[in-house]
Image 1 (cartoon, protein in one colour):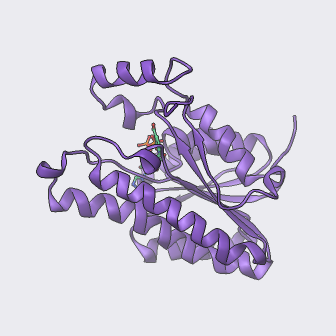
Image 2 (cartoon, protein in one colour; image 1 turned 180 degrees about the vertical axis):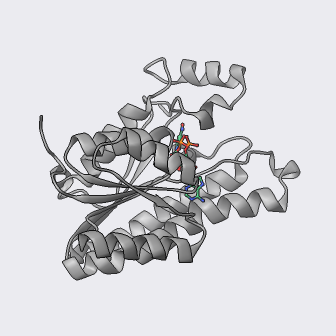
Length: 244
Ligand SMILES: NC(=O)c1ccc[n+]([C@@H]2O[C@H](COP(=O)([O-])OP(=O)(O)OC[C@H]3O[C@@H](n4cnc5c(N)ncnc54)[C@H](O)[C@@H]3O)[C@@H](O)[C@H]2O)c1
């Protein structure tokens, strides 16, 4: 078995489900010590049981104190954080004219402020070590926008802004920052979409199907690993070519 992340300490937010879970599994296979960071404590425990060598950190990315507590505990146990995967994200869809202020604020809080919180609290430890890799979850919606996703698309465009800014600020200090822009991936988030829209998406992808969480995990793996040592500030679209 190859070991592309041997002994790396990796925090994955939103790791209890979907793409985050598949990424946690893949990283563990590659020798990483995976910190399962998710808002749902029971789901975190259940996930750790499924992933050898992983550890449970129940935290809410919107709550700085809970993120700080987890980061402190990880530093005490391991003395370093090599990889941060900012994967936690939610949708609350509605057309512009129907979107409530609460829907707008909640999605901005998790998808945008949450990424800011986690990165700001982890990066000082990476700076101390003089190395690190951050990979953020954007989306094709963060490149092209999407019907019914005013709040979500703003956050995913924003995450690309974070990525390019932090890639400039941190690159010379040994920290690479990149983003993944998945197309439509078969997770609960996407399965919640109306059937006719899902069919249309499959038709529009040039590979003729939805992506899988495991396919996205491989993209995270590449960007987080030393194989991507000269890759910094990219927003890597993994969508089956849906935009072509
Ligand atoms: N599924 C897709 O097609 C798709 C496409 C493009 C981008 N993305 C992005 O990829 C990421 C993962 O998506 P997914 O489909 O696997 O989602 P998912 O809903 O399957 O899983 C998301 C996980 O994040 C956790 N989470 C939610 N709010 C949190 C918070 N405040 N603090 C900590 N954890 C929290 C949830 O508990 C859950 O375990 C998201 O950022 C999403 O926007 C997904």
